Amino acid sequence: MALPLQDTSRLCIHTMTTKPWSLREAIAGYVRADVPAITVWRQHVEPVGAREAANLLRASGLRMVSLCRGGFFPATTAKARRDAIDDNRRAIDEAAEIGAPLVVLVCGASPELSLSESRKQILDGIAAVLPHAQAAGVKLSIEPLHPMYADTRSAVNTLRQANDMVASLSSEQVGVTVDVYHVWWDPDLESEIQRAGKSIVSFHVCDWRTPTRDLLNDRGLMGDGCVPIRQIRGWVEAAGFSGDIEVEIFSDAWWATNQAAFLEKTRSAFIAHC
Ligand code: ZN
Image (cartoon, rainbow, N blue to C red; front, side, top):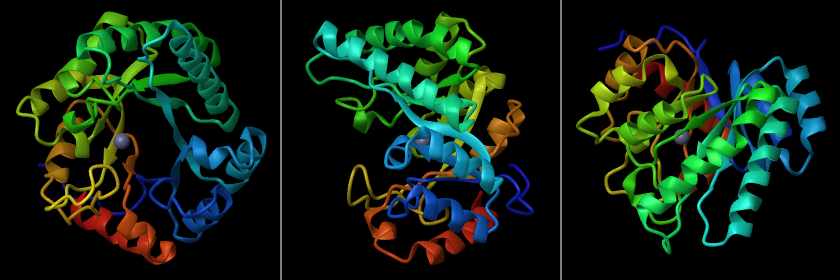
């Protein structure tokens, strides 16, 4: 088991965690709360544009961890697949412009395709955008999603599948994201984290609530659920990961509250449970 964190020096907040805040409000709120790092979602960049977002982020002094999200490669028509590849190239450009070293991929799935066909299209899609990522100096990471999302959000549902894809792409430019919400249940998690080793490029935390009232927007604050977060952090650190610990909470309940107060709770929960 990892030792408790002594401070918030590795705390990163996703702008989706404080979704009601604009990018400008999120930056100001994180700086005020002494949060050192940020992961930016594209929907928070969009209203101001990448150039202005880059200016705001640079001036804030916040450490840029990643841009969320690219992916969604599988589709039933060739045109839709090409559009997805184009959109991923734009996400890579956006990441480069705002200074994010990484684009996280929610790989996608289509209920009209078999899972194996979706996985093939994901691999083809990543391979197609890889040269663009290389040229931009931006890494890509495959984030396995909980199997409850295998119909529309991701046909990559275990860390083993993500590791297999990284192995077959065989590029330093592609790694994996371990998000405890998606993989905590996996009996092979510890061994697949060991196998991933240095290819773990990011680590996301929140908690699994019982009961979960909504499949998408009912993630818990760390400590409010059953995920052994500190144990999983110990595994990723034993595998060589020493980067930021990113709090990514989608929650209609928390979004309805005062976001500055929620951020304070998040800081305390980070120390107590991560
Ligand atoms: Zn995540």
